[in-house]
Image 1 (tube, rainbow, N blue to C red):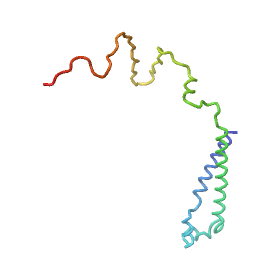
Image 2: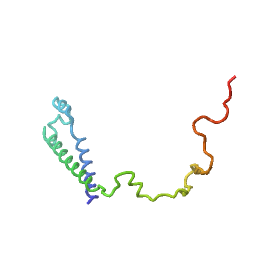
Image 3: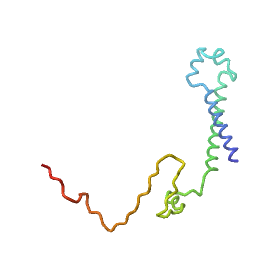
Image 4: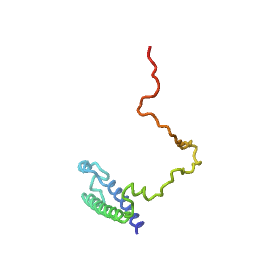
Length: 140
């Protein structure tokens, strides 16, 4: 059902584009009134003087309505209800990685691999503040 609806949707979209390209613009009527047109102006058309524009505009309106309805139908059919609603729920769905475990190195690319930093446990604490310890050099 979904494939058939998608096929109809694509065919209708192509038909709407074709019909819009076939139609004349509003400025084309002024040129046709003075005889500037193929086969002697509007008198040589298949649908008559005004029949083509009415037929093409009605056909375009009908196909545009079908396109709109197939778009709404596909949006309703292809919706997903079970999708997580937030990034936090998506993260909770994955298994936690142990702290010491690292992913396997990818050898398929030539990109350099940066090793993980080593954690050194020290009993010394760093001095507080941004000022380095020690004596500052004096300017002469």
